[in-house]
Amino acid sequence: MKNENTKKIKQHYVWKYYLRPWAINNQIICQREGKVFKTALENVAQKRNFYRMHELSKEEIEYLRLFFENIPPTLKQLANGWIDIFKYVFDIKNMLLLKNTEAFDTLINNFEEEFMCEYENMGRKYLETLQLGNTSFFSNEKSCMEFILFLTVQYFRTEKIQKDILKIKSKFINIRIEKMWYIMRNIFATNVAGNIYVERNNWEIIKLENNNNIPFITGDQPIVNILSEKCEQTEKLAFYYPVTPTIGILLKEKKEDYRRIENLNDVLFYNNKMAYFSDSLLFFNTEDTKKCLGEI
Image (cartoon, rainbow, N blue to C red):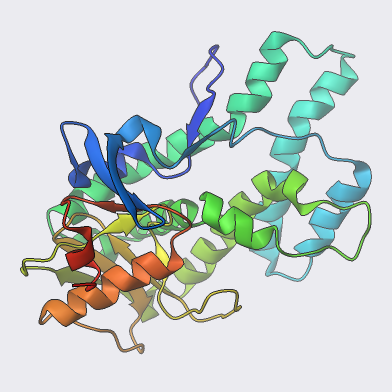
């Protein structure tokens, strides 16, 4: 990771580069609670100090390890590795009796964001390839592994997923999920990616090509599981990911049916899935937002 000495205050939970196909001159059309406005890409899907780390107690560390106790051995090893990586930062501070200096404060503020930048750098070539409508990289083992991990990280890194997870109440009074979510989201992303990769021969990427006069939209939860319902747990996955206003993809099991793009109703189906699972923001490349959602 890069050595970063400047504290990154404005931290994006949706990759700014991903949103560029919906922007014109760095301006993107947004809708929040029915209100439409235009703003710079820098201003959307971001929050102050979103990736800031918190020091966890021994009880909280133990809770994390127990939470992932019953997953497959390889994934359990990865989960414990994530716990150790983030824990190590505070262990070193305490071992050396360091004070809360500005440098250390910058470190715990930027540490996870730097991981996110590495994932983005890894996934950029696949995103650009998908934007051209090419999915052939999925047949290569290394590319398949990298892309699946990139996708699951983009899914779990958002504020929407964080809010959903924080609705879970621990039965332990001293355990606060919000303090440890920065570790858990990386473990969940690795677990889901690992499970898909192991079964990769049963999975496929479907290209959804939209030649209609209504574009695909995206949102502040840009990857959605179209087989799930709000607030309901499901083990079935079919990730929908619009990559431009005219191209989207589905990462799905081969046995699962899917909706092809044959007419405007099919586009509206996917646009409304995006709206349904968004947190508060939708993004468009047109000011005719109602038409994109079938509201007129």
